[in-house]
Length: 520
Image 1 (tube, rainbow, N blue to C red):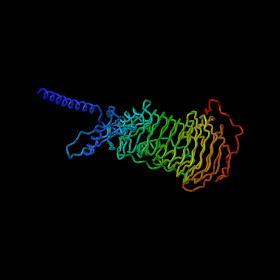
Image 2 (image 1 turned 180 degrees about the vertical axis):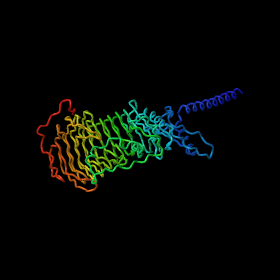
Image 3 (image 1 turned 90 degrees about the horizontal axis):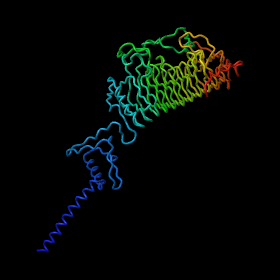
């Protein structure tokens, strides 16, 4: 009997030990000992149910405790009823799988129907993207977003933000949206490493602005050189105003897309069209890259420059098509180290440096290279224009391999620029030196070369090499090359002969005062 009791005791202790061992193993499993098995089981279950599963949500390192999924990731959907497919979880705002963070304007309330005002949704999207370095703000394809005047601004935004434009952004066509007038529509300010890219369109809906004051804006002063054969200038018929317009638009016309005070700016792929005024402007920027983009507006749209540069340095523009109603590219004061190549220009007024020195201001422009450009049916080809009474200098400019087709004035220097107003003669001038023209070929319709330099401060070191320009008689009186106070050299014979260029240096070249000089 005693022996039986002892056996029962041993048996009971054995059973108790088995129970305790099972509990201990379950505890270890809950603490992560069997994480790999649990993950495989979950994956298998998800596959059977059709559930979207991201293996990147979980990690393991031997027997260490697994890390919980980051809070911004989509949670795993609960199991469904047998035979029922589980739709994948919707993407969370601001996540694309662990790389750069994505912010889609649709997730922040944008409708993209072309009539709902999406300005606040764009502002909210930018506010979120601004906080994350190397984030991407998406304007998706197949949507049309009505956006009013807006500023995507720093300086407290993180660096290297991408504005991915694949849809269409349109401007308001009601005067109420613009108040008394604004200088820009879409503005990016004080940012580092900002990129706008994509296959989308920025449409300024500018016809209403052009119509409201078609004759009130300054006109290009080179029009005075273009005299039709019948001695009458035909004005283009008024452009139609969209029926959507609510009242007359303000006299101040906005630039479609402007960058101010930013570093390392890139614009590529997009199209900007029908801007009320300038299409793309860079002001006080350093490190600008523009390539493979398009500007498109009618040739008779007033003051619609394609790309406008001011106080900007280290600029590269290439592989783009620019058609507008003013300069395809306008280079203003404060610009240096600008390189433009492989550009198609037309319609438009060509590529211009200036106008500079207006209202007795000081202008400094240096180290400009413009080459490998095709121009068709433009007013000017390559041009430098300054006002009397200004100061400063333009130096170190190369125009090379420019192909012109039916261009009215292929080569222009005009130091008597005066847009539509009467201007008094003044002795002070912006000094021009070191200007080289090489391989300028094609056809012209008015005058091949027009050099009008200052009486008191002539142009110096103007060089012509391989100039071949042939006339095409169309609708204008044609003239021979013209030079005034222009000194330099003919490195090769030119077609037609530019005999008016004075060889060497001016006999009494007045030096600039220290206050007029530009720092190197």
